[in-house]
Amino acid sequence: MKRVFRISEITAAKSELLCCHRRFSVPKSLTNQTTIPTSTRWFSTEESHSLSSKTMSDLYGQFADKWAYAEVRAKEELIEKVSVFRDELVKNVKDENSFEKLLEVKGWKLFTMYSNGAALLELLRLLESNPHLAMKVFNWRREREDRPMSSEEYAKGIKIAGRMKNVDLALEIFAEATTKRIKTTSTYNALMGVYMWNGLSEKCQSVYHDLKQDTICHPTSATFNMLISIFGYRVLIDQMEAVFQEMKDSNIAPTLTTYNNLIAGYLTAWMWESMENTYRMMETGSIRPDLETRLLMLRGYAHSGNLEKMEEMYNIIGGPHIREKHIPLIRAMICAYCKSICSNRNRVKRIEELMKMIPENEYRPWLNVLIIRVYAQEDLVDQMDRSIDEAFYRNTSVNAVKIMQTIAATYIRNNAVDKLARFVKRAGDSGWRICRSLFHGLLWMFASHKRIEEMEEVLVEMERFNYGCSKRTFVILYKAYSEQEEDEGYKRKLHRVLGLMCKHGYGVPS
Image (cartoon, rainbow, N blue to C red; front, side):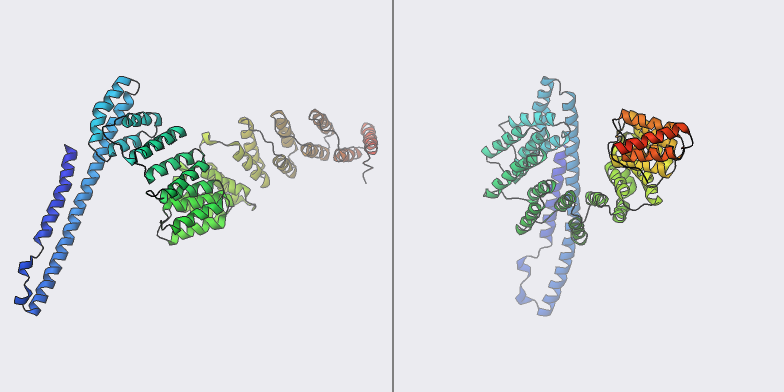
């Protein structure tokens, strides 16, 4: 009864407005121009027109508000009713008899109250998180031949099949809509969307060509938006721009989604200038950037290493929002700072601030390795050690030779021989990439500290990793033993090293 009341309220408002419109209309019989003086006739007509226009404007405004309010209430009531019915369906989904009975009695009554299919569409929307249940409801509705389905209902069914990744079912529903002659642009777009989200871009384009040949249906902005998204994702920028031009040639106004898809395409292709030009076009045009646009730009600036504009966009969006909902973007920002060629402590400070925003369960091994490299580049040994300890604790394995060399070089620059020895031992036991340069660095440091016995233990460790002695190895040993030449034992070892160098053709060091 509530819904009937709302509809009657709208009808009453329209009737009242029509009545008022007639009340302020001037009958022809009262406007005999031959019996009224010109000046009086001009004055009275102008005054009457002014009064009538003002009053009608006020009335239209008053009743427009009433209509809007009544429509909002009707929509809220629909959502409320459908939500209650959705909850009942979910509770009885395992009981086939109860489920069918609910649809036959309560469901059919609810669906027939809205001739445009609004109730079913709302129910399917609420069941999007459970596409199998939504399809069960949709199939039940398809079997009811006594009341034809609308094209929007078929389009919704096609989308649900796509969510289930059941492309064949989506095509079957589309074919059924075509057979029943209720194929529209909405059903075309829905099928294109199914192919797009399931990675079948060629089939999506094929549906688009069919739509272009259809004499009744025509592409819409949603159609072109999907094509732009497909070509952008596949980094086919020329085709993406051609679709955008075709959209403009067809006099179809670009939407916010159009521009966002263009920016996403340029971002994927690393075309930073085109990305920024599109963003400026939005800022100066009628379609303003939204949150999604700015998030895309933030990611683009992070990937391009434009730290200044990245921070500017971060401040526009608002740090708390990003911290709560967009952790991958924070990682992208940290990555941008890690890859920055500038070396300063402010970079480290900003990285540490951003790291605090990432929850414990969002740990990423690759990001920790990048941070280890930053600390190594900045000669922050203690912080580097903490990150290395975390990597060992989380069973992270480093396979990049350059990272290992950077770590070793940091220990050497800071004369941290014991830390380097401990690191090489732990890295070897944990399956990290051990390279010859790590052993050479350790040999040289032990030699410079005159810790000859520990230096010789490194040679044993090298053999364990199948690293023989190279020319550089012999040079380090030669210099270490030559400084201990007064010791007879080291003198013999020195001669042995010289003999091996000559044997391998390395010559005698100068």
